[in-house]
Image (cartoon, rainbow, N blue to C red):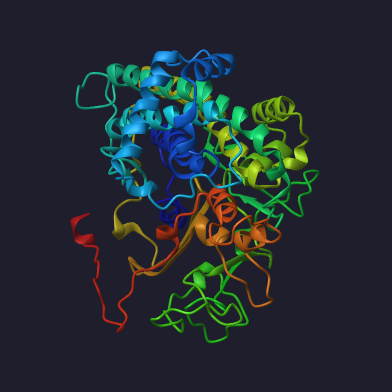
Length: 497
């Protein structure tokens, strides 16, 4: 939408801007909590060890770090019994192939039991708080109310079918519940687990370059989380972002360019599959040749890490007061310096820090929406330039946002009312990029260099670093037919508008 809005010069109403901020903000909070507990925590937490925990000692530990009400010995005993029954059943589902008992697990049984209890609680919590998306977006995932030029959800204090005072109150309640869990469970858990794994503050640093497009615009268009680039782990300077200097390489990706020693800007990008990889039985990939479906995006020729760590580093170095305060508090609590941020542990901590500040900000944005509606402003969409009959014969635009996983850019070329070319560069493409034409590694590959492995048959340490990026392979690959057959075609009927 932002790419088309940029191409056509469309400005969205203030209410639409605020609603987009709210939708994205609660997505950050839910997504980050899910990532920590359900996708990453078990890299550090041994569920089987939790069976040996003393519920009384677990309750004492939990009560020492937070006043979260679910911290009694009776509660933790119930969780332990549930886990024991689950393990005894032998039906471990997604946990069947985990590396329980691995020598690099360091948490005592009581910390493991506490974390497992919160893992289970987070399942119910996230299901509840994401109801905000149903209110503002119709459903979750794949929200239905986004439109070029604004939003499709009506704003009317006198209609029960629109966003009104009742829905504002419901949103505030959901956001308060989200913030309470973040403040009393997620943050204390991260601070409790991290001291057992401080060696990971020196592992998984990656490429040392960080990109944030910035996001959550205010009424003047200024991003609440700032835009910028950090180079070579140097927090003394925040460099500007010039999207014209982004190029994608396919030297080591299963796509083809006429000249694969050169990159292409997304406006000129091509996605031509050229699979040259192994066939069954699969052998090791040859990294000297093509070895992935991921392209290699570069900014001014440099690989970039994107995501919560990039955003927090850029915000911290840009003087964002609340980010600086929370980062400094976390570092002081752990007794470490800012250099630890450039690591696997730092990446995990930054995601939690970001969740804390975004959860705080949700209430402010909700109040901003309520004030706007209260002033009589009910505009939600800018229709002035929506009619394709009024579009220029040719236009180009780029739109950017900061998805929970990182910098997301879309580039569109519109010609005679139709899309002539469209390309996107998603967060996991930046982070999972292969080597480029000069042999530079992407963030994942670089972050794994020097990682100690206790047992090559059970590389838990590799999972810790890769999971710290929160990878999403589905976002970075394309579905193609092996024979080149067209799968589907989508057309847009402009006559209806």
